[in-house]
Length: 596
Ligand SMILES: [Zn+2]
Image (cartoon, rainbow, N blue to C red; front, side, top):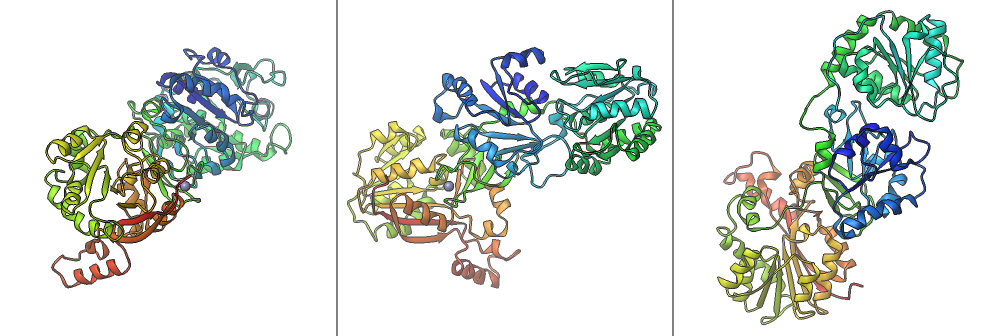
């Protein structure tokens, strides 16, 4: 909680919600302001896991004063800083359009959270988007304190097993440590009456990290404080309130006396735990060597890339499926700046992108295009135009010459040119003004600049006047696919033709390694299609497919090292066609009903 608040205070965000299970009650912002120095009280509202959802209204007010709800920006961060969250806990936030981000959470919510950040080392059941101890903002190694120096007992703001009291009594009464050497950290609301009167009690110290260097030993449970001590090179012994903590500290080989059942056991601690603790406390210099070795092995220090840098740069996508708006679909692959989900309702593979959306300026068809596809767009013009021949043949199965054709995302107009030559009356739209100017001035074809399906562009297009609408490699670029397909349906008259092409997640590349396929999928492909998904989603939006054509066959991807003049190339090509393993496909459909 402390770390999340410190981070949020430093980033450029109008508001953030930090959900933490270690505080029994929701706190008012001004309470935070008191606790963390330099903390802007207007910025963060803290909500505990059990807080009523009514609290969200006050948070949404921060957002609605600064932006339109659809734009999802500027960002509101909902940081779940808990040991284990459940998916059900995330849902109410997602319902309000707030995207949850998990921090060091090992609960089942990992399966559905759009972004997962791990900073505390240890194995988890599933991968994170980013994991590094550099997010912990750890202290540097300090000079060894006197082994007779003070001992700190710190079990955080929550201490269900009452370990602070039990350990303090144990080391004083059973091991014989002088009470004046012992210090204990306690949350604000905890009572201190149960401690020996000579013990120094620290109330929620905000500078714990910098104080650590003065101690000869820290006793705590596995977590941030333990890692701060390891980074500072202070001997540490852990005692764990859950078996999960015990597992993590065992994995990291941290000196520990293991798990203590919070509900059972004698006071102060079981006999054998006292024996273990005494044994460890008698060899502080050995403990220091162990801690140094753990630090060398696990701690990464990247001074210019911590939580503040990461959270400041994160763009926050809406927490739902782009095709059917289902909340928090299960995530199937995570990368540092993106996650992919597979929607159980509509079966689309969708992208959560955490970087700003690329802008389709002249730059897109220049440098960016070259980087992504190799070659320049205008030089590819004739090649792209030649692709139009089979496409127009398939369109002509349900359309006639002389009909009006709208090509959405027409770029510099290769398809429009081919359509005009085939006898259609073409009209283009594109987000790039430069491309639209080229189409108008150099090709003499009508064209409209604008981002489909923005209201302004839709209003500029005549309704039910285009008998044919084409989208060549455009559908995957719609952040809100549902709205885009709905707009296409509304533009088309009944019986009108919709033709599109898009990458195929069921092609040879996607089948060989879906993870690799998704890793290589561009950051502006929000939906990854398959022929099966095309069928479902188009039907849902009022279309009926009359032809699917699998394209993008790559025999060389079927069999490693197959040469284009070798004997297997032809066979591989045949197999690819037979089993429909092309990496792209085209769909031709007619409008059967209104999408209401
Ligand atoms: Zn869906």
